[in-house]
Length: 241
Image 1 (cartoon, rainbow, N blue to C red):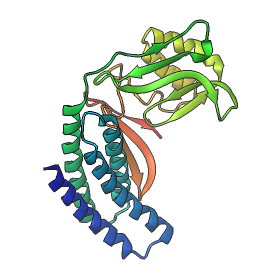
Image 2: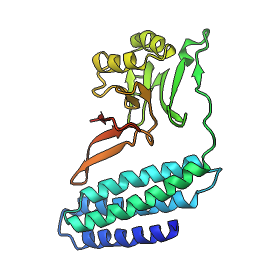
Image 3: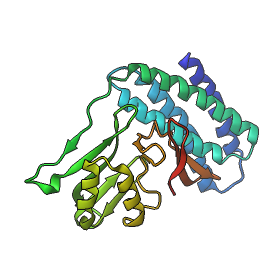
Image 4: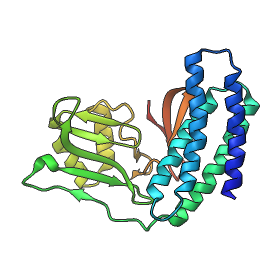
């Protein structure tokens, strides 16, 4: 079944490629959009080829990469029918591979908290998805290549941010209490993260991984605009701008 869906996606991809090859637009932009449509297909194929219990994470990574490329490619196409055909083919393929990955995925593991008292620089907290328990985001004290010093680092589902170390005490105290809402608000008000923690749903007060937050990029004529997340309960918000 998935093979048939990939064949359908390949045909839709070929039509997109033909569309751009005949386009008289800017050559540099045309090259980028051609690459996006091909990447969407090839990454979907890679996800399919890795469908086994030992490569679930790698397959999922290719599948999410394919989704991003498909959305970017489709946003650059002016012809509505062609765009609809491509997205429909991709969505069907994505859903089939995603369902198979669910079947192959191992049971959830434990939440990971590391806080060795005698080595504060190693302090870290991995926030696990409330649905699958996969790592969704991480706060840690580590070396910042941007600041050339130790910093408080947030790595989320759409971004990585480096902050002054003076904020670490408050953030880790709230994380230890699982007061994610406080960390989220502090991120907006004090850390200048415009959308706060991208892995957090304020309405649910829960953490979600990229997949279960259904993170989807929005592109404007082929170029990145923002990312929205929709949690399993239907709460939707902008998580990156």
